[in-house]
Amino acid sequence: MKKETYDVIIVGGGITGASLLYTLTRYTDIKRILLLEKYDDLATLNSNSRNNAQTLHFGDIETNYSFEEAARIKNEAERVLRYFKMQEPKARNGAIKKCQKMVLGIGSEEIEFLDELYKTRLKKLFPSSMKLERKDIARLEPYVVKKRQKDEEIGALLSKTGYMVDFGKMTHMFASQAESEGGDRVRVLFNARVMGMEKKGSEYRVYTPKNEYFSRFVVFATGSYSLYFAKSIGIDKNLSILSVGGGFYTSKRVLKGKVYRVQKGGIPFAAVHGDPDIADKNITRFGPTVNIPPMLEKKHLNTVIDYIKTFDFDMPTMVSLEKILFNKDIKKIIANNIGYGIPVIGKYSFLKKEASRIVPSLKYGNLKLHGDIGGIRPQMIDENKHSLVLGAGKIKHDGVIFNITPSPGASSCLANSLKDMQYISDYLGEEFNKSKYEAELGKISA
Image (cartoon, rainbow, N blue to C red; front, side, top):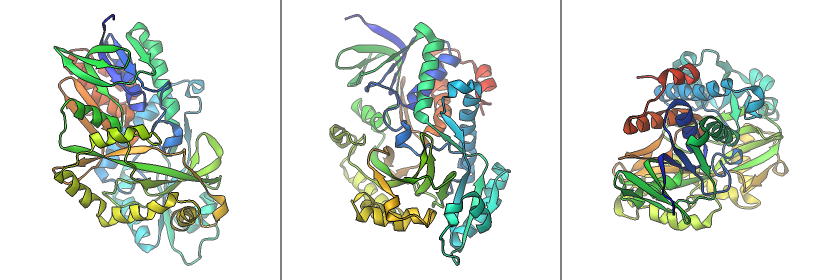
């Protein structure tokens, strides 16, 4: 067997891996880059538009962020916008669309919270944002007000930076452009399931059932599986994975744009929101629902064993899990969500507690549960702190990066790939074209 040697191997063909492939090709002189994807296409899991909320997060309607987090996310999302502005309209292929976006407050407590949020964050970071009263909401999102009790207080914040993105299409754009620009420098292989990795002198040996590949640097962009691979070579960091699954209900199109609910700080599970679907203009999606499946990939029962291998069944982990799941807010979310997937009564419960809070006129027959929509988002458990690791999860170790859970997901893909590209370039002693990057995708802060 001929030895195949690369400078960088990227494992995983979701948006995290594809964006890194693109940035390494466009902004460095690294000679040989290989991307290995275990399925027969890119973006088959969480990056697929069916499996996420299709939201470009700016930190404007994410009420659980601090001011500093919102400012960071805003900067990261603007890199995505800059990328799309570089593309010819035809090349975007419907991958991004402008849409209005608001966060809805119900009751005096939530409205007061939004008022304070507007004064302390939105006016400074998003000067074009607006406070909305009931009559304004009725004009912009009629179904949010239609058939709502007249004595129920509502208010909202409107964001002018609303975009929905088909991150699956964006993933394909990244890879296609990398292959086009990189030529012989870039190779993408499908049906190449990585079984493991080991250090061989100054290189890493990455092997699949049929082949083996050697590289000076390896990046795992495999979501929940990244920690699995880290642990397989003895890098534990006292972390475990809590797999959090999400599903969606759909109705006919009743919302013009995205309508989010107020979410408490420190809670990693997104509050249920209503979204138009970028791939189907005739429907509105409501979700995500929350469950905790003991697997690394949704609907892939063969990943249960790997989940067990990734989860540490020791006392620190059990103590951490107890503290997380018995947090009063998380406990309430999970308790409500457990029943949402049950036939008949689950839909009734979801309608009453979630969907009708956004669109009061919805009826039982309007909603349909889509078991094939939604994915799994890995949440890391820090066994030392007995808590969830909120935000991005990344492990760096001697020529390897394990990307576990970039935050807030695909919206930060280019910011995440920038960090990895800088680290890889320094490690390999290769040039990074900073001026070109800044001219195209925005200034890099110190």
